[in-house]
Length: 319
Image (cartoon, rainbow, N blue to C red; front, side):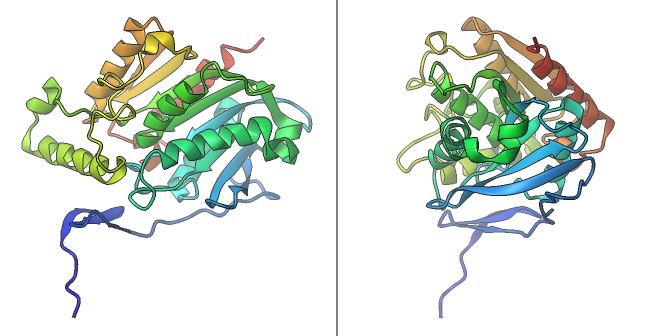
């Protein structure tokens, strides 16, 4: 009789990680796309962009946009520690619907492959592919993108692992010719970074924080390429193998941190790195808020303020 695997970490409502680095995910309430009937002021539709990998996107379009009016495009990458999450999760859908309305954007939210079944760089490749799909491939034939998408005003955004993906895909596409598609800015929310060396806040962590740091280490362990450690370039943007950002033509970056988030100090370090490397960067802090508050509480006042700041950042580039 096969013995059950030992659970090394149980995050109730999200996932269990076992001793052999496999994972079991809890079911989450899902929201179906609604292409014809507006829900929460937006219509949405799902498109499989890569049948070989199963990667798909969900588009969010404000319902009151006149036909032919062009909106900025926002590529969005969800969080979940690389190992869970979906743009179809009910709460994620509600947040992105609110972003589409508040910021008057056409959102392209990517459902990328998850770890540990598909270790990094799979998520980066999938999200970069989504940008290329919109710019150079099948996206050109998608009616909503053709009718409403302003390819001269494109942005990337994401939270937690998705914020990490924004940084990586931002560097992957920086300086590349993508046809008419121009990336004007990056929105990095509660970014998930790490390193082999502990930063000061982690060294001084309380027992509760120590448990969160242990989870962070475990998520990197099941996500990184085999044989890599937390100084892998995508984990540690200041690591020994990471590119010198002074040489990367990144667009302006909005970094958002949450006051009660264990990852806040790393988000601040990322913001300071951008500044030292001569990049145009803005910082927003949601005081008294937890990691991913905008997903857990998509109708809160704090979330509304974040959506408004995202809108201001995006529309500062309007002609």
